[in-house]
Length: 458
Image 1 (spheres, one colour):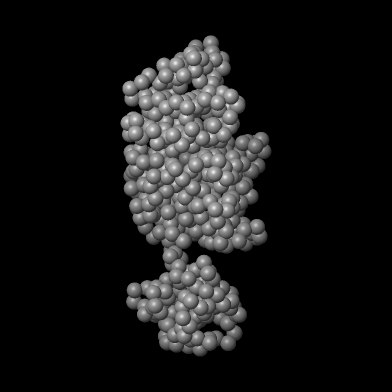
Image 2 (spheres, rainbow, N blue to C red):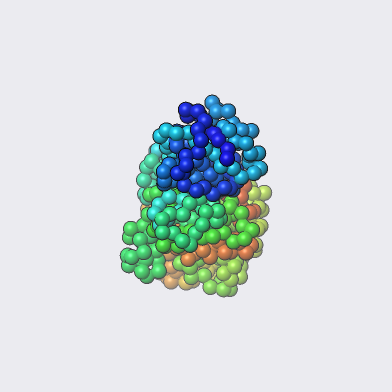
């Protein structure tokens, strides 16, 4: 049996006789560290880099090994002395010295403390909630809501907060009582944490929950190496296993796609109808693809965002299968929509942009008994935007809102991405490390790219 010690110990000591039996397994170099100081303890690890700290005479703690600068590591991998096995090419058991020991778990996280005040810093790694999961984040995509919270806040945001609500990763630990999930499973996490018992949850509309809490808003989100999913999330269907072959970055797009599916349900899109989408950004292109899948016979895509007015960028939206693309920087979008529909107008209008002009144009472009869905939040100046109510009256038109998504819609969105029915990969323009989270939020804020994904290596 190998002997060893760690930095700060009192020398090499033999293995305590009553230390609990230890599973031998390969210990890979972990990227998300835990510092183990003191003893007596022995350390074993698994192929995912998870270490188990066994004390004497009983009990255990869970952590991950770290190589500290003052240590004399074995190769590039470890902090434990005295190992006579080739590590990590063979399993090993490593001993810690006598004395008190502790596990001090930390992680990297992007913390928002106020408008514009975002810092990537070290934070305590969250404990695995009883009945919940601890997820090692692999990808967190950013959206306009994240950029809004970063710039000026949000009605549901509680500070300080780790942002990020479009998340995919790997189960790192299952909480007490959890039997359906195992460490190592690839998952996507929906942000909504409804109560499951209010009238809206019981009526099948949990996104309208009276006691809703949201990951990345009320609870810490995915711009961190680890994310705690409470028992409430598991019981309400917030966690889904990734389909085979689906990457983490694309899986993180399930939540924004689910919001598109909710909008199409609220607006009651029927096969054979004409749809006009305002905004050729990530949400516009996602909802256009989803509308085509739902049976839209004619799809008109209008670009209104100032950063995307040039025709070259507008042409990138061809993956939506749009029949017509209208550049609103030089062409009247209402006239263009009526021309393309022989004067009838669009049956369904979806403003996938915060530009308030899109609301005015969209209402004017509605056909008789047409429906317009507001599923993208407006800036403060748009809250009291004037609406021609007579136009709604005489055309029997409908103005409806949609907010967030349900766990059912989220699961369907993940399935569509996994089957390749929705092209998510084409929407990703930037892949950034966590250290560049601020840059990613600024890219989204300035509409300088398409979908920005922050990735954490495994």
